[in-house]
Image (tube, rainbow, N blue to C red):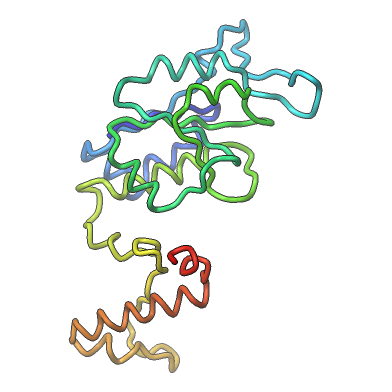
Length: 223
């Protein structure tokens, strides 16, 4: 998979690309991630990419020209263009699973007060990572990339994510490690039993219990 991320702040991705699972996926050649400063696509003398909004109002708005020129330069028949946007579709695990099927993702990071509305005519999907406002689209782009890349074949063992939270519309079950008794708080006996069938049943019950307690809306959405 190839992922091109269009941003005004490339250095924000330095740690993201050089640590942990994303680093290993890149080193294995499973994914190619390019961070592109779309300021380089500006036709303005000083590489300006924003201007004041028509009709007045606060802040600065990203201009069409540099963003669209960057998209058109990078896009191919295999590309899916994503716009990070508070008005976009809420990002979920199911969307990450859909995105992993594409050969090429182009993710556009917004900044300032927002986009020129006409940019929407050049994207395929708008995504929001939550009902809150960030200073830019870099963190959403990282979240989308991380959630998608970890699902690619060869990045991590499939068993590591098949039972993750949201994989079956339920939150994950509680997990424990050594010691078996920490300050009087003991690991459930069933997990020490070696009976894999009972452990499986226990974990499913705990998933349902955990979801009812913390995210009952997930169970309502599943009806």
